[in-house]
Length: 326
Image (cartoon, rainbow, N blue to C red; front, side, top):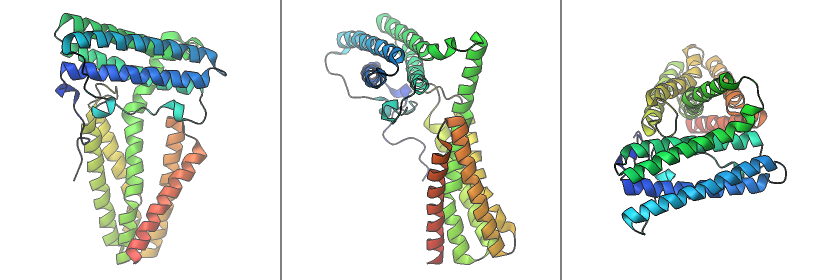
């Protein structure tokens, strides 16, 4: 069964004003604590970045207090438990505090992602608020998060020439990564890896290139439809800033099919052994290509990505051989 909606998650449109304010309070507290955690780790080596984060944490605390004042005035003392993880559209941003080594550019990028989501959330929330006091607060918070978003990139932009042109180029690059590279990479990884076991299980069980080709194509098309729908329907892009869900869904679905079809096509050859050796070679090329994309666009270590992806891919291949040959 295809999972369109993450289980237990709410859409932003279904949230009441009380739930929106509760979510905002929880988010401000979480962000403030994370900024302080990261600032503590950066303080000795990168004091300027740490000071920026400490200032952002203080402002998050002020935002939380303002939200609490309005919330209690409107709804009383009880605040329902609601976090970003409970709402569709918020993309999980991995806390950089978990990284073994922190670089200021990684921290700025992380903070920019967090604040960008917060700004879009408050803009949407202000659109739902009818009371003037609440609407004004949410609009002010959206503006403040926009200032945070700017602060998170200020050091980098000030150190590079180009001014507005460079800022526009940076934003265009970011949108391309969010809307094309990320969903495309997710699809390529899923298609290249998830279809390996059924393909090679069919190959070992039937020793028939035509039957193996059909299984590979069916697995690839099915995976592409599933991944495309899941990517397109799980996040409308309004809060995450990831753009058109249809674009992401199409990119993810097509790349999933490409990843699976690539190692199925060798079974067009009539000789089973030759087709299987060629399919294995294609798998190795696909896995190295995935590692290169992660290195080029997602700033992951190339060799660590190669090792992780190839080991994972070979394990799935081995599972297919064992199941098919059993």
